[in-house]
Every structure is written in structure tokens, then in C-alpha cells.
Image (cartoon, rainbow, N blue to C red; front, side, top):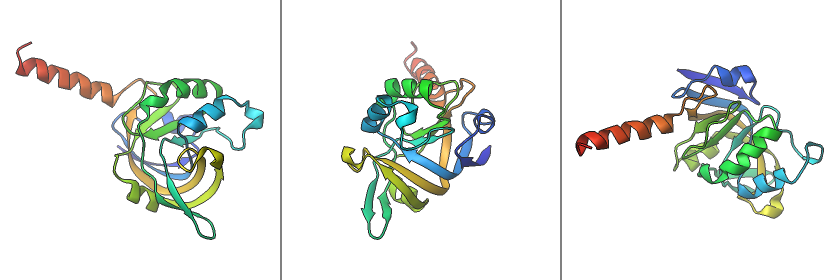
Length: 185
């Protein structure tokens, strides 16, 4: 099934999605990588320069340029698995509803994982209407938190839904079954 959603997301938005659904996003998303995760975990909610209520987080390392204002050159997804431990703590503390990245993550009850195909950075940057803000540039361009206004951002595939369904696990299970059949294991 295909969905067009507006970020930030509500619990209802997340609960209606199922693994395998296609999603296009409009609205506000934030980029986050390792350094920003660590910094966020060192702050309390009162000292944060941006909100995370219903947030959509994009694991990526953007390349931006500044003319009069910031503009994306490329914004491609990065591997999410390396941020799994930090993500678990962030989800305990903040109301994050979706994570976009590549490669999958663990299952989280109140959050979905949206897979974006790697290698699509030029297409992705064209779906950014504007850069609203940037925080923590001292971490470097790729590690800073970019607040982006996106339109028809996608296609994103619901890789892990809020009901415990995981496309990555299903694919691994099917691959295992095929290998066992091929080699009569």
C-alpha cells in the first residue's frame, strides 16, 4: 500500500503502516548521525535547540553549500545499524516516530524504520524544498543536525513497522531456507 504522510508524524500515522508499504513524506525531517546522537544523549530536553516530538530522523551525511542560504548538493542515506544502541536510548527519552536509513535496525515499539535505497543522493537532494536550520556545525557538515523541509520525499519502504514485522528478518529467513534447499541441509 502507498501512503503520503506529513512529518512530524502522529502515533496514528505510524500504526497504520505495515512492513512493505511505500511512504512519501512531506514536512520536516532532521538528519542525525553518530556525533549528533552522542550530543543529544548528553542533553536534557530543556537544553535542546530543536524538538523531537513526532520527529522523523534521517540517518545520512549530507553535503551542503551556502549561497544566500544553505542548499543540498547530495543527501544519501547511511547505514543505520551502527547507531542502534544510541537509538534505543533516544527513543526512551524522546517521541521519535520514524527513522530513515539503509540496512535496517532493531525493532522498536513506537517507531518505524523507513528504508531508502543507497546511491540515490542526487534524487533525495531534489526532494528538499529548503534547509530550515542547521545545528551543531562544530561536529562537521555530515554530523551536524540539518532541519529540512521535504516534499514527496521517497519512495521509502517500511522495512520495520510498529507491529513487529521486519522485512529484513523475513528476507534473511527466506534466504536461509533457499540455501538449505540448494545444499540439502
